[in-house]
Length: 307
Image: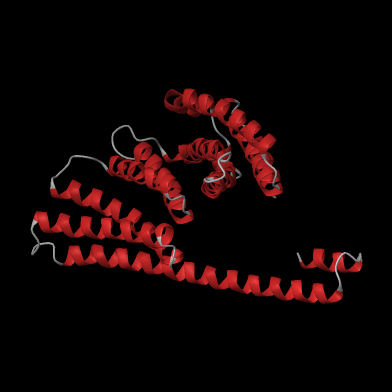
């Protein structure tokens, strides 16, 4: 922006006095943004510490509290953080940063409530089921208040649920499927983010979800750059296809369609670049799953893509 202002002055569009004033205003605005980021970071850390304190308080007095009191305390903190956060951030708008931090705290406490209820009533549910319930419970909150912290939490819970569901319990898959599963789940997450990219209200959340998918894709490709992961035998891919190939094909087609629509509608250079990178990684994942190699071809290809 500074270069553009200097260029305007050199071209005679603005005077030297106007240039000086605009540069001063720009510097002040950048300073205010930096201060707001610091406040947001401190508020988020405070929300995490407060949530941890609530959980530790319940744990320390576990035997002394009755079941109703345990549930009441957690529900009161959860609903209180949710109401106060929404009130401060969107209704009164007096302390928006603090309000968003409290909304993030409420999303964390919802998970604590779910795990506490499962423990109190001895619900025979695995960790994957509880994480999925937590994910589903905070999704409406993400649509009502599209906040960046909640979007990152949803993305993390998505991967935690995927890996708990596939690699634990009866019928768990071996560890060699980790990179392939990372690619498939990241593609699905990227497609979901692309689906919401058209909404201006959800643009920030959609971009975070897309970036989360891209990062996991890159991590998977990094793992596949090692010979032990990249040399996938046909039998391994066939075993994987019994539970995931059909799903992968369906979501790959959906992802291609969404990426094509997103690329056409993107007006910002960064979004178009993300879409192009996502498309390239999607093609790489498809080649890996359905055209496995016994040699080191994928190791070389992925190294070229990464470096």
